Structures are given as structure tokens and as C-alpha cells.
Image (cartoon, rainbow, N blue to C red; front, top):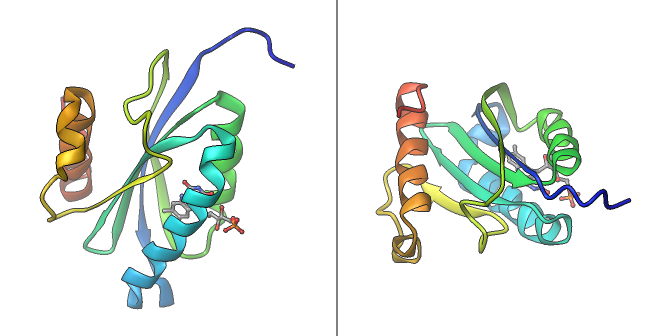
Amino acid sequence: MDSGDRRLHRVIYTSRLHGEALAAEEATVASIMDSARRNNPRRGVTGVLVHGKGCFAQVLEGRPLVVRGLLTVIQRDPRHTAMRIVKVDVVEDRIFPAWSMALLRDLDEVPAEFADGNASLLMLMRMRTLLHTGELGA
Ligand SMILES: Cc1cc2nc3c(=O)[nH]c(=O)nc-3n(C[C@H](O)[C@H](O)[C@H](O)COP(=O)(O)O)c2cc1C
């Protein structure tokens, strides 16, 4: 039932690849991105996945119940471990409205597509800091 409540949740977490998934990091990421791009549009989920050095940092944005359900699925995913929820915000607007799941390698240049929005650029920078330091920064 639509209660008319348009609030969204934005969740940020980190985790570590392990086992075979770590040994085949590129293939693991490709398969995760397949799932995200297939499933997220119909669930109204957007965000970004940053990876590098065997770690993930992800932003998930969507309706609260949907995000919670997806987090439960992701948490059980054996391809990673040590999932740590860093931040949960109730928000009115998405930072990545056009991205069912954007992908960024930690050392890649930030793609030009993100230059159109200060909020998305800033968040990408913060996610990189998070991946490298474990802290999200200001
Ligand atoms: C770090 C990480 C991020 C993930 N992000 C998503 C996501 O945004 N959307 C999604 O559907 N699955 C995501 N997954 C994959 C899920 O854990 C799960 O494998 C998938 O949703 C199963 O759906 P499928 O059978 O349609 O592929 C992610 C997995 C990992 C390890």
C-alpha cells in the first residue's frame, strides 16, 4: 500500500571480498553489477559501488523496506565478509537518481558523467576516502 510517504533511505556500508571472489575480483564485480543492473531498476534502487584493494564501499538509495530487504540479501552473499554499515540517512532526494548502480574503481578517474552534479561528485570522493581509510569524512 502506498502511504504517500516518499521518504527514502540512503545506506552506506563497507565490506571485504574473500575466498574465490577475491582471487577473481574483476569477475566478481562484473557479476554483482549484472545483478544490480537487472534488479535495481524495478525495485527503485539507485547508488554506487566503489571497489579496490579487495574491499567494497556501496551506497544504496531507495524505499526503506526495499533497501532493508536488499541489504539482508547482500549481507548473506558469500562473496564478501565483514560488512559494516557506516551510515543510514532518511532523505528526500537521491544522490544518484540516474544510476541503478554506478561502478567506480578506487583509482580510476571519476567519469565525466558525474561532473553534472556536485552531490554525486562529493559522495564519490567520500566513498573513496572511506574505502582507503575506513572513515567517510565530512
Ligand atoms: C558488495 C555487493 C553489492 C551488491 N549489490 C547488489 C545490488 O545493488 N543489487 C542486487 O540486486 N544485488 C546486489 N548484490 C548481489 C546480491 O548479493 C545477490 O547475489 C543478488 O541480488 C541475487 O540476485 P540475482 O539472482 O537476480 O542475481 C551485491 C553483492 C555484493 C557482494
